[in-house]
Image (cartoon, rainbow, N blue to C red):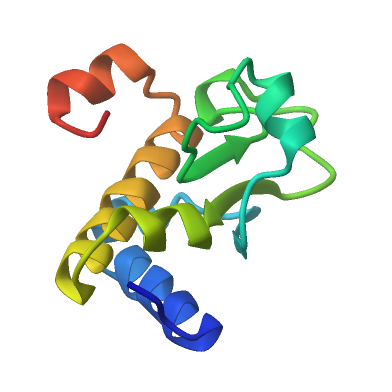
Length: 124
């Protein structure tokens, strides 16, 4: 399943727009960026094998861990990796669903929700 970059970015924007308003309202100082794929260095840094799949990544300081007196200077980032998602999915519907799950998963990390709780909620 392949989309143009513009179509893929639009699918990511749609996934964000479907998040509940109370979550979107908290997404200040957060950039959501589409990358083609994670770099080999990033995968190695995270302890992934070169052939392992990574759909998305949150980098930054989760909201519950932030200091009220020292806000971050730069936006946190959510990276959404286009090629692994496209390779994993067979239909446009499956790809849109997987993008939505990935966006929700990474936004949850921004909100301070860990992998264990995400698994309980069906997002891992």
